[in-house]
Length: 146
Image 1 (cartoon, rainbow, N blue to C red):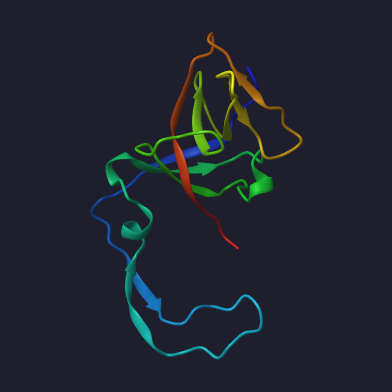
Image 2 (image 1 turned 90 degrees about the horizontal axis):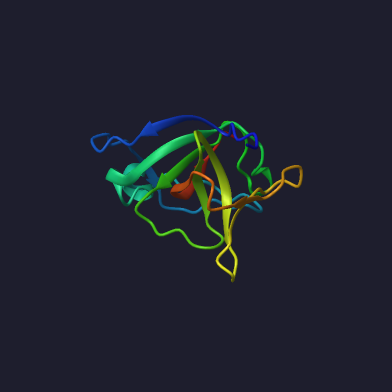
């Protein structure tokens, strides 16, 4: 079995936590900065904005670097929704035996399934019928410090 220690911890979503943060009306410029406006439009609840299916959504923290080329680094916190359909090209949390990993799902025209890393140092994983394999959910957001 390939080394898959890519998941540090899994966190359950709290349906009762409401963290309303200020939502600023003006947009932030990624080019030349504009003067900040002092007007706050309202408050935004990130649980409501980011999590559409609270019962089937969880957070999971990444430990490996196999997805670094798409900005998923060690210690990145992923939001994973199990209620969403997963298809070719989606980033997923998959279980291979007793290990969890984050990879890009690839479904070939012939029905073959592959888990693809986003780092050239790692090899794709071909899923065979003999493998104990399950897709846990689709990664919908990644959160990391800057």
